Image (cartoon, rainbow, N blue to C red):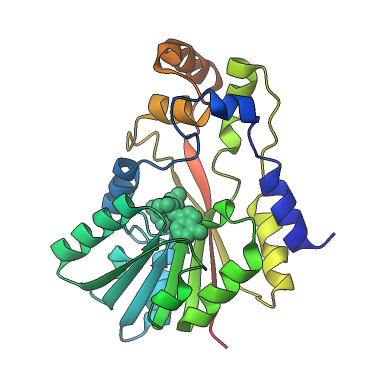
Length: 260
Ligand SMILES: C[S@@+](CC[C@H](N)C(=O)[O-])C[C@H]1O[C@@H](n2cnc3c(N)ncnc32)[C@H](O)[C@@H]1O
């Protein structure tokens, strides 16, 4: 089996039992805009390898495409070197947060609603494409990544956690549902898959404090949602979190390549 196929298979292994999803009070996969807006706030201060890589690719400045933009954590810290930011997201509320932040920063912006790469043609060509914390949602890697490469004349910067962002929930699934869940793919599954697509990127591995430790979001609400629980189980969630712990740090990876 190819690495691209293994990537897909590993993500598909994370499908939840349908009866659990049917009984869930809200979609277990949704993203809270408030969390990603706060993450964009945090990203505005401080340097990261991802920001440095995008800055180097931007040179004296240019247009930036942010795919799966959320609140704009990947692209907004690049302003004013980023003279125009284009956000693509399948969530309209994320795009509203992205547009509001761009207005506050006084940078030209465009929002494209829909799934990448389906909406790739609606996004104008740019100098640099950034895509942070999206690929673990992308089972069909080849068209997604090829469209990223095709969109940017100078290069692409991808940021990912080293392990699947929900891997730390495995012990909580066991404790709260008695379910043994797979941990999902890691960055070491992604890199060979990119290699099969003809991409030999530069890679920087680094770590940062977990956003949960920094109090960026409501971890109980996050776990409740991801584990398809109702709010009346919140005390169980708190006690499971007290026993299993919340990760103190996030191991991160910046993966970047120049356009050819
Ligand atoms: C984990 S969030 C990351 C947001 C932001 N990039 C950041 O680093 O804070 C993933 C975002 O990607 C969006 N998304 C996931 N798959 C997508 C796709 N195929 N096309 C467009 N947006 C997508 C989600 O709606 C969500 O806003």
